[in-house]
Length: 488
Image (cartoon, rainbow, N blue to C red; front, side):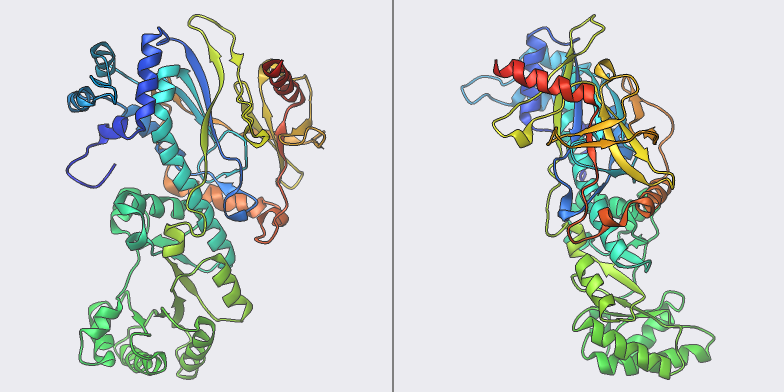
């Protein structure tokens, strides 16, 4: 929640769209408090023209569910809301129901750091339809942005070719909550550290930072500023060279670096934040090498993204690390993932069997997949993923290994003889978390491992190959049958 004294952890229940509450009241009035639903979170297109996305935000779902409460202040506020036609928006009986409300949902999700692809469920929520509906907005808010940031970071880290990438995006992020989400998701996506000190404390992410242009400008000369910083931070010494003139900055940095050597200290690195980064980094490297300072690293910043970094290396820039801020924190050029939360099955109170449902829409592109779904990810003999099958057990054909493309039923993929892993992992059962929270470092390692095994053709930036995702044949037939029945 927001970093102000106006909010508290339990306010997650009001971190929602009004229509979630009006629908919940309608379900309550209709006597559907015990009717169940199955909802899925998914997206329709990979972000950034990528061939994949990195699942993120799932590690905070259990906290969201357990903190979902309506306290007295929340109830009083809801009671004060007026309907456009006059009178109270919410009935007293419904508010009394919310006062004792506790989430009873069961949630399964693709683990954080794993790769996820269009139209397959990233998160599956099962439980009373009221509970599922009330969870929608907060859950999407949690997963959509962090998945987008983690994916953007993974692309930047890929372009960096193993060189460290720092998250410098806090000052350009969408508010304090956005800054925390960026730091967390970017670390999972592959960033080495963050400038965000609060994120370091909360999530255990390594923090990094040195000085800004204002430090240099506060002293009578650049060389005096460098000397003062070296004296203050000899174990964390990085000089920013472009406050006035990079060429003079190189000379001043070399002078102070030599003075540090005489004291048994070392200048760790220099940073360049403007200009022709490829040209200036080459000049800097040559000057420091000639001065007998080959250990001094070169770091660059200044509106970097995966394409800029790729271009710098293509020009032979001898850069050792990157500070990526604005374009990572704002996920330029795509500000949202477009993840949705759709009902796929219902079950009346007391029933055992689910009734699959689907949205047809005026656009074929928006047609959903029915049923209580899970995902099988198939692997080749080298342990590389080669295709995902969306399965509904009730209609699955025994021994089926054909994947029917979600958008084109004439396209199939044969997975005969391939091993698979179930991708949806239970996180919450009947409103209670299952196990202790996973360390953020485990999600980071999982992301690194998953990307390492992904086909380079899927991972490339330009025209990536589409990763196969489709339906088990019995599910494909069910989908067609439901579509025909709805149009009959």
